[in-house]
Image 1 (cartoon, helix red, strand yellow):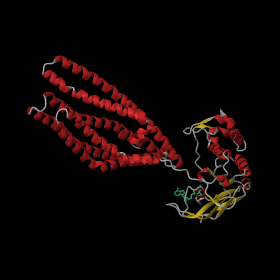
Image 2: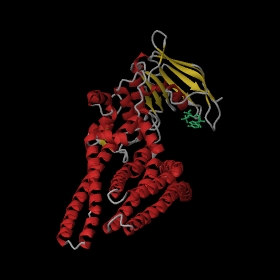
Image 3: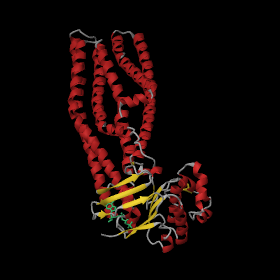
Length: 525
Ligand SMILES: Nc1ncnc2c1ncn2[C@@H]1O[C@H](COP(=O)(O)OP(=O)(O)OP(=O)(O)O)[C@@H](O)[C@H]1O
């Protein structure tokens, strides 16, 4: 994210902002310059000329006022438009590459805010100050070239010295972003379990964890402010040198009859303006640069990744897993028997708790890389293919619902599947549930206030996979919250279909188990 992106958002508007800023600053220079002929008119007793110059100053002042405010509004419009695009691009990135909610929140919230106030907002002020400085130093020529040389010399040092501190400001800003990401992460982790903490009266752990993270964020904010203050401090030394030096030189030139009386006062005004702006430019520039790492990171997030070519999931004829082992950090190694799952097979996966059933589904789905062994997908002619595993049907234990109607949650907002979804209701034992809901399938779901029971949610998510014709379904305890009769009905429907099914389930009765082609039992080793 940089100036080019700002310009690209709308070239015409960006040009308009630049034009208005230049107009404002040229006006401000003329406004100050008029003080010199006004003083000379007073010294020479020309009252009418003095009043005319005063009136001209008034008009110029009003023009500056109007153009500055208009530029400011247009700048805000341009920046917000750019941010809207950035947010869209980042969302696209996270659609392709999943991440923690807190990380996404940090980028879309805090980081963008930081860039808005410390980059685009500052750039506007920086440009105003820079244009004013150039115009004013140029105007000093009309008084005496020595004033220009002195101003340029002091301005040069005022700019160059603080640049050495740049790398520290950059580092400090990055640190604030990291600490903020960590803070949001801690909040997400601990507040998810707030109800449970209340139940067991565990306020202290919440206070401790959030407190520690908040304190680190506070320290990093303070450190950043400290570094920026040092930059401002160094800049202020040169500002004073310039503000005092220019009128002093103008005074010497006056006593040597090189400039008139008005020039002393006006050069003093200009010096105030120049060195105030130079100081602002320097500290603003340091802040602008301090956002560079962050801006680069957000730019990277906006790069559109080329979609990989995948084979169709409909071509999968066989899944073969050989020599699989998985070792999590803090638990013992899980070894799996070799597996061959043929197209259309209905397999029940059972075993004691913790034997690695859910982990196996995640390995087959490519979510977990095994420590050894491999999973290959083959087509009808026995050739290894590379399907997009994210497209396979998968029902996790944690069910994801969206704000929308129950029908939307089944069709995933694709109204072309409405009829299919309505047909799926009966064989999936959902008819009774629909009758009990006031608006049937049109009943709205709010994810924050879930109105569906655990079993009803399982039925909705199962129907979601079925109406989307997923050729392979991995089901992780997909019927665990559904009553026995309804489960039998659902399993009967499921096992009569063409899909390949690998389903983890506990406590199925014989009748239910017999619906499957075979059972894989994972043993504790
Ligand atoms: N994300 C993880 N990090 C560390 N260890 C994990 C993780 N997920 C699972 N495990 C460990 O791996 C082992 C297998 O877990 P898994 O959830 O696959 O078992 P399971 O057979 O599905 O259990 P259950 O029937 O109770 O759902 C367990 O010992 C568990 O503690």
